Image (tube, rainbow, N blue to C red; front, side):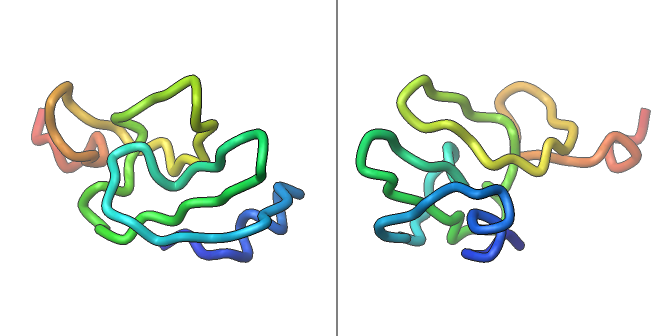
Length: 76
């Protein structure tokens, strides 16, 4: 699971870090440099997008309307 260290490694300055259940997280908000971690492992995906929140994304495969699953998990 993504941690606060990932923001530092990518040189994303965080004034504060919150952990919430949101399909857009992990992400960060500009201006203000507020960083957000994903609290719910099943929502940790690339399924959501937003112009307001640039994503830090694991980029796993997913089917529209579902949580992320790896391609091998889809069963063809």
